[in-house]
Image 1 (tube, rainbow, N blue to C red):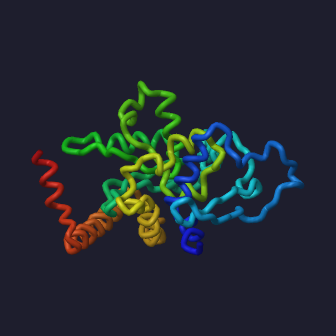
Image 2: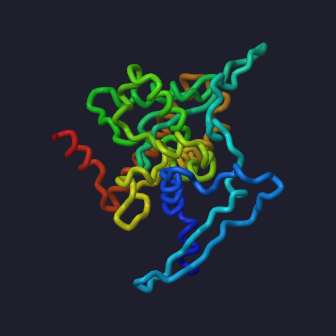
Image 3: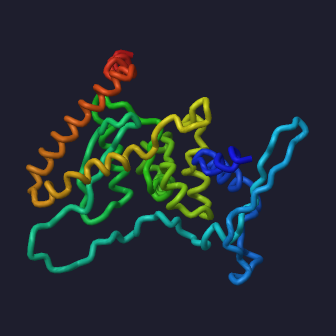
Length: 271
């Protein structure tokens, strides 16, 4: 029973439950028939029983008070108008954030500064531009913490974003569990990583580290104090050199672990 209890806390188990709950016609976690005063904020109710084969099974009944408020928009959505406000500027103009594209192995593919806001349209354009250069290989999956917004934009304008129509667009596991509203139907249907079995290994665990980009951001944050006062030319040169050196270390570590990334690249390019 203890093993089953802790297994429920694993990301794959939780996301599978969410996906199954979304696919049924009437989820049992609604607040429609309960007043706010009647909602219990206790943890979900767990019961255990033996099936016909004698195996111990766990049954969990979701507490309606642990789901959150009903909202039409996903909690992790970006503001459609951005967060840029008009104001007088008496100093240098600064970028809003730095976006990176990172492969699951940890190799940083590209970086680009964003201005004013992290617009999902710019993210889509950035990804398409990077993987449209000669000898680039289009990814089968694109994992992004706000893919629910990006996917909706792709489906709303398929003629403009046709490049993404055959690309799996999911939210990384951490953000999907903790930042995205469980009641947002589009997000649960289209951006749940559990909906793509190829992302899971034979042992039921995630085949890739879907949060590798977030972990790379922590590394990049260590250079923030150095880069803050740099002008664009020096800023881009410095970051590109740091990324190049980091990629060399990452590739060397992968080779030492027997993954041999350079040989795989040569083999793919020769086919």
